[in-house]
Image: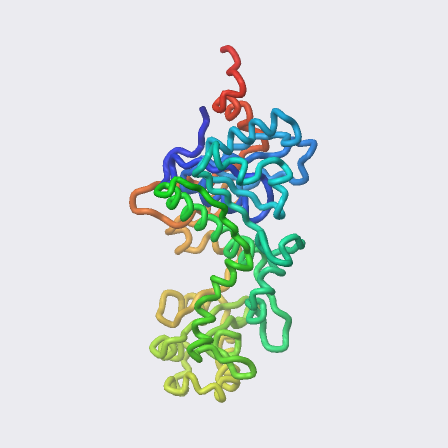
Length: 373
């Protein structure tokens, strides 16, 4: 049997994933990276909208089932009954319409954890509305701090809502519920809404707002591209570097390395001086190329990093030392995270083609017979 899930801290855990796009397959990838036996239920080619056999399917097994047929539904039910958890990212009510509602497994698989990830959540007035990452982040208030003064908010594609607010919280919720089921004997539904997850991710900002450490507009805020020491700056070659010298000792080190020693570091948080100081820092950074500044500042306490492209990030010495990228079939894949002192996670690999393991899985379930050798 070609089970690719050997090893890892989640070895022995079986998770069924309903094929989709975005956060659900990413959550499945995270679990598969850690050794879980993640089986993706794909639609047959004639019913498939997207070919989801991508890098996010690495380490998983794939079976094609037509859930509108009796045999396909029977196989799906058998699979779900064999698992500790299920992942789905459909609109509320879709699994119920397929005959795969959580209640249907209360007797046959009472410990089943039913993981549901959506943008708006399973309940609420927007639960049935369409949306994407940018919309979910906007509703949390986070988009309002993702732009420069006078400019529209700008967000990195898919990362904040889909992956951080959705998939990561779904994975966390699944494992919490699986642990709880070991003592209670009962599974439950995990409602991982991206607006909920992104809201939780903003806890530090809300804490700072509550304590008066987060100035509201029109006051200047060091995190919102207004300070001379926490932002990205353009270099002589048109590329950019980032500075993040918030603490006084790091700010002093930054000024020293920029050769701006006439600036008094004790006046760091005098916001009235920021526009003039920022102009000086920007002019200084503009005097050298990005790589020249990297040679002067990287690895110091000035809190510095160059802005790299994806291709450049993969070859950076620190990334290479940690093995953070792998080339698979001529394409880069990020390595699994986090790392463990004993457990070995799976290296990135090619994802299965849709249905690649159909016969293998049906044989395991007793729904098909091996071909005579």
